[in-house]
Length: 245
Length: 58
Image 1: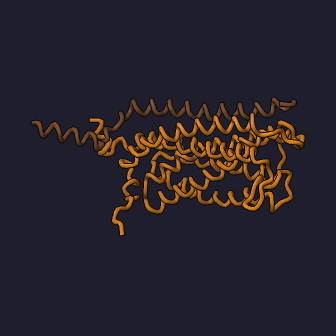
Image 2: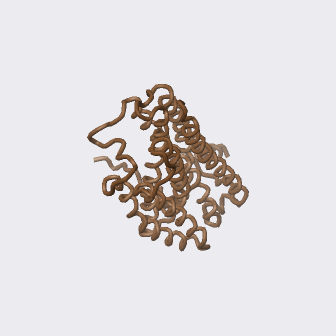
Image 3: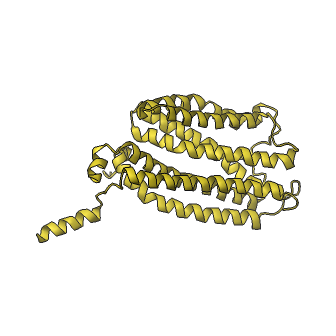
């Protein structure tokens, strides 16, 4: 049996994670740009016009990935915040803080693009429908998390308060996901499930490629932000202070 | 865009502005951070090797 294992604990230390994150950023940046170019090309030049909605359906290629990222990033943020809180791992809390801004932006994009799609599809920009209302609550949870952390001076106390809020708010994620099944909503059902694809293959691939692009984008941006947070918070720590001196 | 230009380009425009804005704000923050805490010198394997070579010559 091999004795060589990745020492995960090593990278829980900001001093070790900082250079690792620095090495990963260029890779994720390049992949993000390539995937956005390919995804947008397939979405606008390969995917056919929808027989019911005409060209307006092309909003789906950014709306669905943004909505998914809003939810995924919230779960990820809550998990990191919980790790930071439970194990007193400050990098976990820093990751949660770094993710929150990007998650809020994607949630906002999903609300705006959904509204712009709602007008041609349903005749209205906004209705107080279960999915839209629960997504709006998600947006407020992100804003609450960011403002709560910003209002507390001591970073570790801010981390703990944020973790409580993030974990309590986690209940909203399954509500968003299942809202189209639990309530009779104006919003359409899931775009695709494990059993059935309801779209043409080129439409589906454009959406999946842009989904991957949004993931890569999020990773790149979060890594840059967490490096900023590490340097801001740890500048008094020996590993940084010595380097500066 | 078959009469849907405002909605389609509006959606992609908002996305571009928000994601582009996020990247710009982040680059600004990175520059601000660099002023208060310069880039830490991380000991790479190459740097360690070069340091060892120098000390050998001495």
